[in-house]
Image 1 (tube, helix red, strand yellow):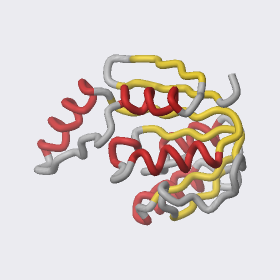
Image 2 (image 1 turned 180 degrees about the vertical axis):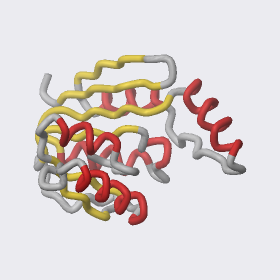
Image 3 (image 1 turned 120 degrees about the horizontal axis):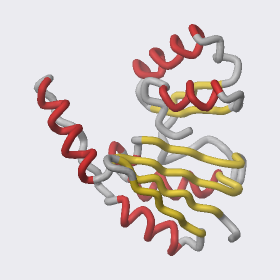
Image 4 (image 1 turned 45 degrees about the horizontal axis):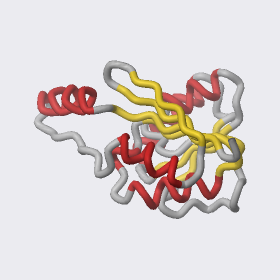
Length: 155
C-alpha cells in the first residue's frame, strides 16, 4: 500500500487476512496506524515503513498488487510515484482517489478547521491516460466522490 495515512485501508486489508507492507512519509500518521493495527490484533499482518513513494526500496515486480487510496492528490511528483508503483508491481495496480466533487467537499471540511486540502497535481483522467500509455489494461469505476482506477500488466 502506498500512502498509509492513519491506516484505514491498511486495517481493512489486514482485516481480510491479507499480509501487506504499507509505506508513508508521515511518521505521526504511521504511529496512529500502528496503534490501530495493534488494538485490532492485526499488527502481525501489516508492516509499516517510512518511505518516499518516489523511490521505493523494493526490486522490480516484487509485489503481486499495489494499492494507493487517497494518496495521489497529495503527491508532489505523481508521475514519479506512479512509475515506482508500476516498477514494483507484478500484476495489478489500484489507484483510488477523490474526484473533483470529492475535492470540493474536502476543501469545505478542511476550511472548517482553518486548513486547506491539497489539490491534485495530476487529474485522475491523466493518471488513467498515463497507465494506458504505459501499456496496461485500465478499468475505471466512478462513485460520487471518488474514482477507482484498476490497471493490469500483460492483458
